[in-house]
Image (cartoon, rainbow, N blue to C red; front, side, top):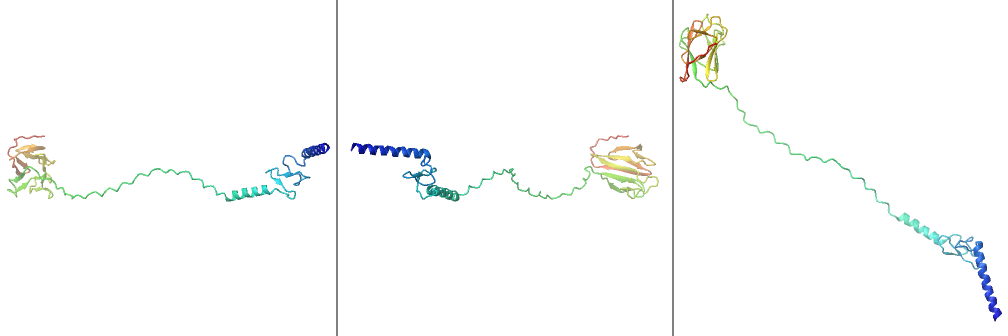
Length: 223
């Protein structure tokens, strides 16, 4: 019995030594397949996944299955979401104000020349039209020309002999460069302020100046 046990032990040691040498020679080495088959009782393993391989297999089915699953996962993966475009910044637009209503049409008033505040007139004392009265306006032209305000039938008077103008609240007579001159109260004048009852001589025609306001101080300025 002792010799039998010793023999079995030696056989076991021999097998172990053979397996070790086989591993060293490349039959079975760290999970590598030697031509995809087993040698004796040695089992081949896939060097990638480490699964045991059948002697009839040329390729590892475990790796093939894993590759198929990975490919399916890649195909089934949803497409990446579209990239969000950068925000577009626009300048703020000022709010539009309501249009202004059209201007209100006011009633148009027609302005007329103001009437003289002072009431005055000239009275002819001689000549063809003696006794006639002429209301004094802002400007009264005296002479032989038909365009004059007071037309004289006097050959010694100039066509436009003199002119009486309202200046403020007073009336002033001007000689218009006549040939025979203009006289106020027998004095030759170029310009003179008129007051009530002044006598005016143009050529041979005499007129008297009348004014309602008798409170004016009697004074005269001569050029």
